Figure 1 (tube, rainbow, N blue to C red):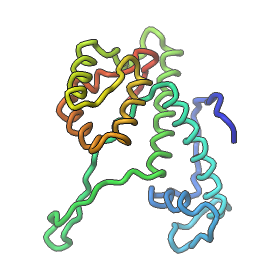
Figure 2 (figure 1 turned 45 degrees about the vertical axis):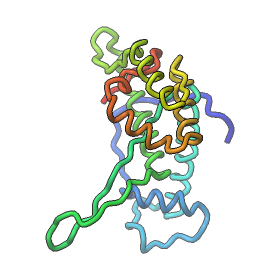
Figure 3 (figure 1 turned 180 degrees about the vertical axis):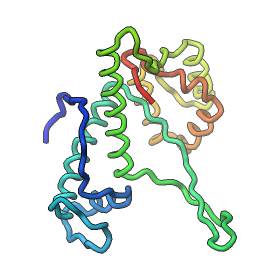
Figure 4 (figure 1 turned 90 degrees about the horizontal axis):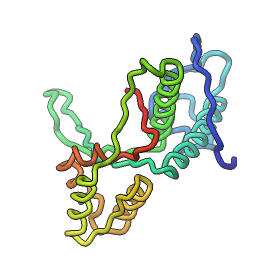
Length: 212
């Protein structure tokens, strides 16, 4: 409970004995059912003396941390541009696609994503601190005024205002467009897919170090 002040981590060599390996759908089951009865038949067996209730408590605690990490990222200008993803169903006999469905991003996806980001940042910071002259990191350049101008002019032609003065205002503008502009999400999807270079170059110029 309360605000997340900072995250401290230690990078060490460890041997981990997992109680069980869970699929994303198992994580979603815990998040979707935080207090109710748990059907053991829907989960793989657990080792190391833990129970499903223990695992659920741990997952819920991790999710609480992930939510605060996400809030902290977005408060400092992190930008998320959701792209529509399509999944396909297959014919069991012919092994060919026979339908499709939109890929829905769930809370379990967000939980996993947040700790993957945290791990990337931790490794990057460790590398730059240990090998300041040798670390090979991916650093995003600041946006060019030309890209910002193209983005603004394109949207303003459709009576959509956007603030590109910094990444925080840019992120807030995208959120507003999705929620307030009719077909805003579709419009942004079409624009960003036809202007990948401009979008990839729009990054906050401060502290963008990632390892992939």
